[in-house]
Image (cartoon, rainbow, N blue to C red):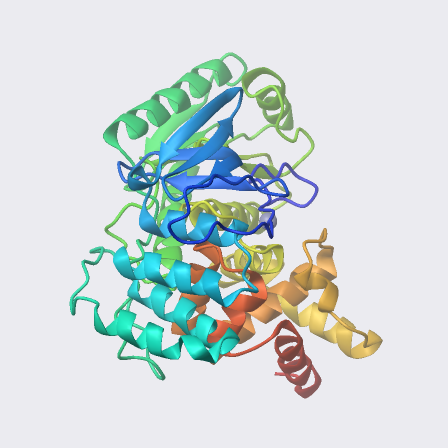
Length: 429
Ligand SMILES: [Zn+2]
């Protein structure tokens, strides 16, 4: 997200209400507000506030409407993630119930993790877990876009049945493209030279001169390939809901009028921003920047946020990782840009001032120093084990909390990650 900008992704609030015992017919409502992001088997989604749940359905407030969503219409991984948000995770029975659900719904890795946790909390469940695992069919159905199998310890367990990105229907693509063309049409009222160029993955509407089209198109595709490489997605596949729209305005006055007249909002004094609507529609709009490097740095930073919003699910990443990754991608892909050295400057400052960086793991507003630290943490994790980084992000997008996912994939707590970072900072690496 842009600093001080419009963060449209909703924050997930975990609640600790108890889940009804397996088989119980009761319906329960959460003790706190819980956002539900239900990904449906037909490719659709339901987002809103979770009102009630039972073994049979979720009830979600969507705007003014109360929607009853039968469990069998929701993708199992989404049922699992949503239940995890509202169940009492301190109880062994909870993990047993979650594990059983995962086992029955072709999520063997998730099941195994839940069973491990159940046995950690109550050793007397070990035999029951063993029996459950023994009764599982040898080959559970898997998604063709499943993540690569984990390596190292536990490598024998099957790859998680996790898709790599949110599915989309032809109707959604057509609706998105129509929406984009409508916005462009409105913008032509004050930007007559707004013209469209198209690449394999992007629709670019620009008021720059035609000689800039080629570098703009090439950079966008280079950026897409870089993001795909980072997350083990073949570049031939399209993660977007159609082609991703980018609007580029040469004049600040055009950008301001875009905010006022086209979207009636936006961030009129920004250098650019990424809009991610709750219905999944997203675009980037760019203002004039002082240099080409600054322009491309921001474009790649924002496009990384847009890409991550489509990766696995629309669950928001922890801020430190989301911003650190966006800064890292910009630094890697734009030679000479400011982000390329931000982590080095932050390390230098930290060496001088000392203290703790623990606040970065809270969902706090980040300043320039924090962005540098966040990028440093991401670099450290990628350098340590790139495949584990992909698994970390995947677990986070499946709904795991920041430290929980870090422990599962890198065997690190936040504190231990901070210690590693300090060690790297002090050694100047
Ligand atoms: Zn950002």
